[in-house]
Length: 123
Length: 492
Image 1 (cartoon, chains in turn red, blue):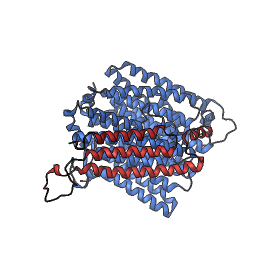
Image 2 (cartoon, one colour; image 1 turned 180 degrees about the horizontal axis):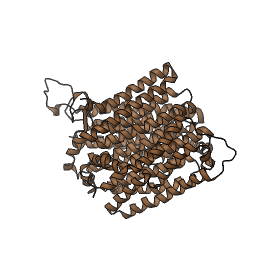
Image 3 (cartoon, one colour; image 1 turned 135 degrees about the vertical axis):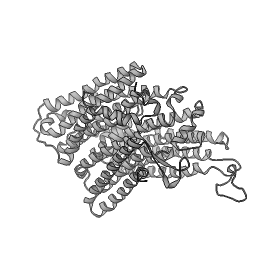
Image 4 (cartoon, chains in turn orange, yellow; image 1 turned 90 degrees about the vertical axis):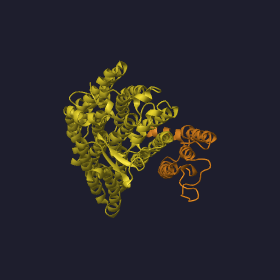
């Protein structure tokens, strides 16, 4: 599998992933955690997309002028996979937001340390 | 033709069962449970049929939409897959029986969405086990997880917070798995498990392969609550409704353990990978730490459900030790423990749920004297508790026995010592509870066993714990051994 885009795209993906991880682990606000999660998922999706890219190739729709040579078309499979992954990501975000609405209605805050104190108190 | 369609038919039945639950349940609320129960019975019958077919004639392959592998996605069911899917179905039947009364009492008016999500969870779990495609596994993993998050949010308000925290961690785990799939796809150009496995040996020393192993095992390990990634589990199990915990605790972490087995022994060749990166050893030692931490934390708990949750961390770690040791007997122990722990943990969580519903009690101290007031419930509880400690002839004894033998086979004496010593720790928290239940007087409390639907699964699982223990030799030779990867099949 050729790596057409060089190294910079992968460096960017790793950076994006680290930003997402930072948001998920270190942010106190639950919505920011969720945003971190989305950034992380976007990084994984970009990783796949970059990986299917070939320089000098075009969209994977048969063109009589280009023939059937595989190097003239980019690899469509990662794109197909990521369409599914995006759907999964949207569904996860939806469930997460629904949970957050219920959290905020009951506890009146989305600050994790404050929530944990309330959890321990009730328990 | 019928046989090769059976794996796909299981997924289709569960999917249409979900639709039936939603449409019938919206029309008449009382129909939600019957629709779900019938679907689960069909699912269980199909799983047993699949297991029998696989035992007699070998793996079943079902290409989807006529596209043959490796181009198309296929469902592949071998002995291991059929075994795990049957465990899921068996637990589902018993929990569904219990759920009829329990869900109506815990979340009145919400039966329809609950049972719909219940079936989606089963669909996801069955799909994970049945599929032979790496990316398809990710999709089913997320289907199961999403259903799991929404089910776990049912319960008191604290359940919503713990479910959200679980969602963040679970998505991180699934994304890591997906990243591992990306690496594998880049290396091999294929997503079919068998095809990838055939292409990997020539890539054995490629650093990207090691990264993909680490990401997959790490990501799925998070879902499996492998130490030190177990922190989401105790809160999630404690605050969720009793029916949710009773279905999620026995099967969800086990299915993750199944994925680890599938990856390490059927996709990657663990021996080959271990030359560069000792995955097995790391897994075994992290699990050993998980056993100790889980057991010690369980002793320290005052809430019965939370105690069981920490004990789950320890028990799943037994499976991790078995996988990590990677000797034939240890792997038998790991696979057997998937079944055994599912049976006993389901029973224990059903009992804590029943106690909370009948008496409103949650803490261990409040269990005093309940043994005489709820004799049937606690008969099942006692058998399952003895199995957790590992007293023969209950099933818990035999999976630990195989793990110990496997540890000796691999020459890992320190791990053997951890497994044996942890039985003593388990004995501490269960015998303390049993003494309280039977010896202490119940102060000014009148309580009774719950209705038949809630009592029957507990008793069935209690008896099942004994039957599985007494019949373990048959199980190991006829079901588990033929399902192990070729090189590990011979028990010496």
